[in-house]
Amino acid sequence: MSRRWAAFLAAAFLPALLVVLPIASFLLLSFFRVEDNRIVRDPNLGNYAEVFGNPTYRGVYLGSLLLCLEVAALTLLIGYPVAWFVWRRHGRLRTLLLLLTVLPLFMSYIVKLYTLRAMLGRNGLLNQALLAIGLLDTPSKTFLYNQRAVLMTMTVIYLPFVILPIFISLERVAPHLLEASTDLGASQWRTFRHVILPLSLPGTVAGALFTFVLALGDFVTPQMVGGASGFTYGRLVWSQFGLAYNWPLGSAMAALLLLTALVVIAVAAALGRKGAVS
Image (tube, rainbow, N blue to C red; front, side, top):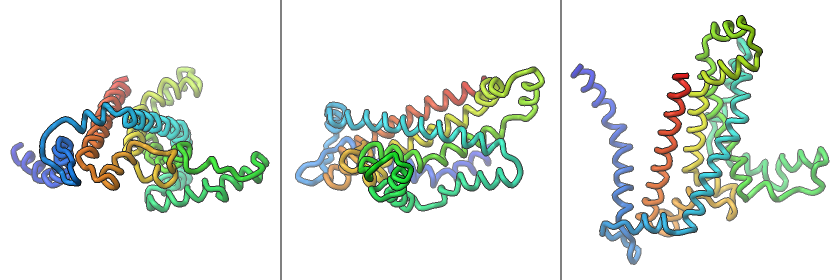
């Protein structure tokens, strides 16, 4: 047993060091302050008082939470039917469809952002399609550089992170349970509601968790497709480290993001355990 623990500690030492040390440095830095463009190591809670007391920061934070919830909800509404459809296929068709759904994960994040920005632009594919079917008379400017554009872009980019864990959960549903449900006279809807959906809940929660946490800290997407109207908390944190050079305040803001992510992970883990027990 001691050898196993020694091997585990040896393997986990470097990853833990690379994760724990940066987080600890951020937390420590959040208690300092900036004066004359210099970081003054005078421990205090002034940054946290500023984060929680400033109504602008609170508004951006709450707005970002709502945006992340919307992204998670949309990816689930789209991703679950896609994962279920792929799961119901057989043979090479299932493999091909699964490959197509996860293929965007192998593409550059920046390339995907530029592609989506081009599609949402005034002369982009979305405007051209709506013009072709007669829903628009002139190209619309409302698809880009606003909060709606951020929502649409994040939903498309993070969709594979929802489809894959849901598909894996569906793959673990034992076929004999479906056969037993059918033998007992349950309809397809009742089988889905009482057998498939509860058993796939852990993957569903994991997918929503991935999407929420990724969207929570994303500042590149709002910057590229959101414009001034798509300002999020991630951009606020980035601005403190970049433009304002107020690293202690940015660290305090990042600490709030970390706390939010930990709370969401804890809630998701509780829901996943409840679904597994059911």
